Image (tube, rainbow, N blue to C red; front, side, top):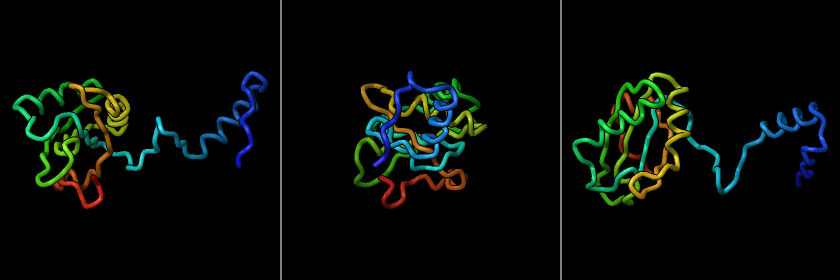
Length: 142
């Protein structure tokens, strides 16, 4: 059991700094903010943006344009998963950014955002797999 966190108003500046440093050393786990499991990369995978059969001719271009708010979009690909998968995982949209920082900005802005009544899920995706166009989910990924 961890000791209670002292009230910030009762701390000196040095104590507050040390507390922040100590807290930054342990993972934050809460229902509102789960610990990110994937390793950051320049490729962001979006799911639940649209469902199965809802991909139209403009989705790729519109997604790339929206993501340009966060940085240079090098490539945007849409992959529809075949087989028996949940609707929220049936369409995988991959965005490759020029820099890791740009991907991180997009991840933060898009994860949990609502689009067309759907809550978008963002994950980082392995750059080597993306380069090889290995876009299908591996067993256990969904």
